[in-house]
Image (cartoon, rainbow, N blue to C red; front, side, top):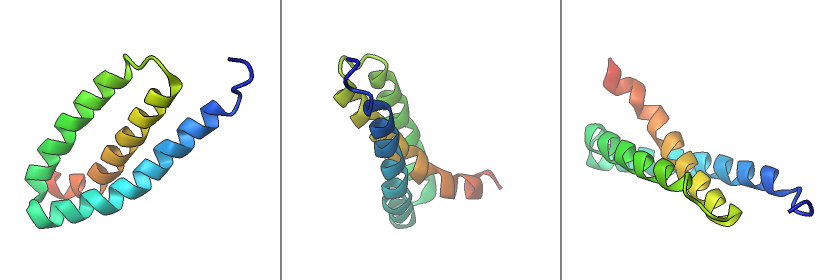
Length: 85
């Protein structure tokens, strides 16, 4: 595992790309289907993926879970404040 020094940075990169993609895609879905509906779907998926990432048995699966988590958090953030007002 010592020769995989780049994995930490790679996982962070996948997560940040997920945030970028999630902000665009989930924002559009929230405009089409309603913010409240997407809000609950995003939180349910976030709960499942976070729970699943804790049981990942390889760094590739963990990186994929982190990318999805990043997308869900990135997509949730823009419209979350509008629901709290």
